[in-house]
Image 1: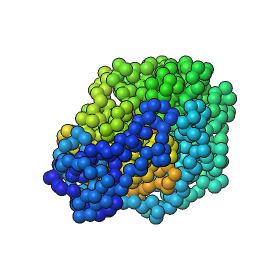
Image 2: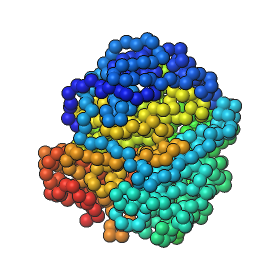
Image 3: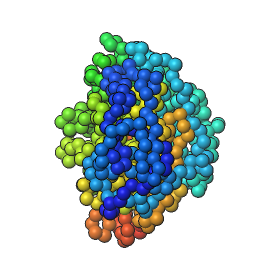
Image 4: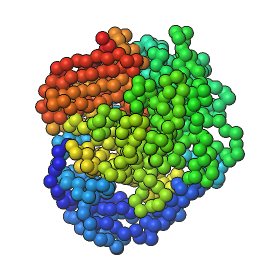
Length: 635
């Protein structure tokens, strides 16, 4: 993106959330009530299960401002540069410090806006969960698991369920069945779940993954059920029809404990031509128990005899639950939230990076013989203290996928650590650069996506966050905003611009996907909100930037096993190369579109497209005209 001249913040006329961090134009000292809230959050997260509620500390007060003046309950302030972003049209102040960008030099005028079209879109269900009756702080692992599980749920996947070329949506829900919405065009959707086989209340799930598990050219569904005695696999058996094949497929092992499933991921890790499955969980174990991890790797052994999967977790070396996280008061467990399959070292084999709570994130390198090795420490990753969501994309343009992991941080509160940005330096090593580039502070992060939101040819970063106060962590992280960091040409820093472009959302965001749902050449944004309706933001671009969407397939049948995780490189007339990898963009309880989207900036001219399938096949298309959706099959 191009740089912009400095500007003063526009006058604010609303009653905005007063958080104990920098407001526009001033730095606020921590008062007694802010310190009390901070202490409660600190005790809840760092000290373990015990926490506080709104009754234990004063609620954060409202900050009322008019015509640029400020009236607040905290009297001690000092002058400081403007460090937050403000929505000029709505007056809603996001109050997000641009840490790492001391002079963001941004203005309220941008060449695109995100417009809330949720109501007219018809996405009217509520990811509803009643406040838990069990105490999160009674010391038992069972109470903690059941209390916290609803708060992190809410997933979504993008698919074309009827072959009309429009992306449809499949949502998961806690304590209820999934919902399937058909895209009617013009960003209007209709619930068509009834009678599909997805309408079983037992399919209460957190995350999900869609893929062609049986090679017949359509999407089957894997659900990380929560809570349940199994995981779920639903095979597509007809038009708008799925059948539950979990037991014969091998995903319902009665020897495993109650599932607290989180994420699900698909990928052909053994390169035998079909998609394998990994499913993660978040579950605390009782001290001294002989618990078994329900985070499992399933190898696809179908071979034309119906869907059959073999649990190869232990044999493949995926060892989880062996760390003793300090932040859980010596409670062991498995705390996987995000991640999935992606080839991070460009050796043609899918690796398995996992983002996980309590400093237990892992990076498993694929040995190429059906097994993995833990390379977390040597690679310089796993530094996120409370790993939640993750996303992978080539942020710095060097041809290698980088990784972004959301975490938990509140400025001025010790014991928490920021989001992490791992720049891939090659040779299986990474360099952490989140704070250096300004994308570290994300409050209580969840979903994330590294994507080109304005088609200018570089990668921006989106993230959701927030946690209900009733869970026991206090109000300080209850109403924090979703975030959008802008990538600039020089990558010196990435200022947070969400409020300027219409990303004004203080609900408890969970899953996040971006997709061109109205087929106008730019990426719309969908956020799944906990205990709220989904938020759909239409991307209204006025910049005229060119784009290209590449839909990689395995062949004329439309099968997608080998094309999942295919590498797509787009080269413009100046020799600039952009890398995209199929279906690795967003990875918190979600599964994005199969087609990759590449922004090309202004007047790029014809481009070349190079595709490399996971099985090694390659194809190059030259002099491709931008502003089209291109389907590519092997030579």
